[in-house]
Image (cartoon, rainbow, N blue to C red; front, side):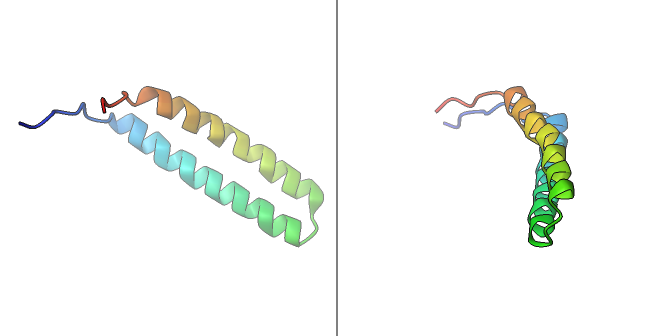
Length: 68
Protein backbone atom coordinates (compact mmCIF):
# COMPACT_ATOMS: atom_id res chain seq x y z
CA UNK A 1 0.00 0.00 0.00
CA UNK A 2 1.45 3.33 -1.03
CA UNK A 3 0.68 6.67 0.50
CA UNK A 4 -0.16 9.37 -2.03
CA UNK A 5 1.63 12.62 -1.36
CA UNK A 6 0.14 15.86 -2.62
CA UNK A 7 2.09 17.29 -5.58
CA UNK A 8 4.22 20.35 -5.00
CA UNK A 9 2.87 23.32 -7.00
CA UNK A 10 5.02 24.34 -9.98
CA UNK A 11 4.94 27.95 -8.80
CA UNK A 12 6.50 26.94 -5.51
CA UNK A 13 9.30 25.06 -7.26
CA UNK A 14 10.09 27.97 -9.60
CA UNK A 15 10.04 30.51 -6.76
CA UNK A 16 12.26 28.26 -4.64
CA UNK A 17 14.84 28.05 -7.44
CA UNK A 18 14.77 31.83 -7.92
CA UNK A 19 15.12 32.40 -4.17
CA UNK A 20 18.08 30.04 -3.86
CA UNK A 21 19.84 31.57 -6.87
CA UNK A 22 19.20 35.10 -5.61
CA UNK A 23 20.47 34.30 -2.12
CA UNK A 24 23.55 32.55 -3.48
CA UNK A 25 24.49 35.30 -5.90
CA UNK A 26 23.90 38.18 -3.52
CA UNK A 27 25.67 36.55 -0.56
CA UNK A 28 28.52 35.48 -2.82
CA UNK A 29 28.84 39.09 -3.90
CA UNK A 30 28.91 40.13 -0.24
CA UNK A 31 31.88 37.85 0.42
CA UNK A 32 33.78 39.08 -2.63
CA UNK A 33 33.07 42.72 -1.81
CA UNK A 34 34.16 42.26 1.81
CA UNK A 35 37.43 40.72 0.64
CA UNK A 36 37.90 43.71 -1.67
CA UNK A 37 37.12 46.06 1.29
CA UNK A 38 34.15 47.63 -0.49
CA UNK A 39 32.08 48.03 2.66
CA UNK A 40 29.26 50.13 1.22
CA UNK A 41 28.63 47.84 -1.74
CA UNK A 42 28.87 44.78 0.50
CA UNK A 43 26.13 46.28 2.66
CA UNK A 44 23.99 47.01 -0.38
CA UNK A 45 24.46 43.45 -1.61
CA UNK A 46 23.61 42.07 1.83
CA UNK A 47 20.44 44.16 1.87
CA UNK A 48 19.59 42.82 -1.59
CA UNK A 49 19.58 39.27 -0.20
CA UNK A 50 16.84 40.03 2.34
CA UNK A 51 13.92 39.85 -0.16
CA UNK A 52 15.15 36.43 -1.28
CA UNK A 53 15.08 35.18 2.31
CA UNK A 54 11.51 36.49 2.55
CA UNK A 55 10.60 34.80 -0.70
CA UNK A 56 11.96 31.49 0.60
CA UNK A 57 9.90 31.85 3.79
CA UNK A 58 6.73 32.49 1.77
CA UNK A 59 7.46 29.59 -0.58
CA UNK A 60 7.92 27.21 2.35
CA UNK A 61 4.45 28.22 3.55
CA UNK A 62 2.97 27.47 0.11
CA UNK A 63 4.17 23.86 0.05
CA UNK A 64 1.72 21.59 1.85
CA UNK A 65 3.06 19.82 4.92
CA UNK A 66 3.60 16.12 4.25
CA UNK A 67 2.42 13.67 6.90
CA UNK A 68 5.14 11.66 8.61
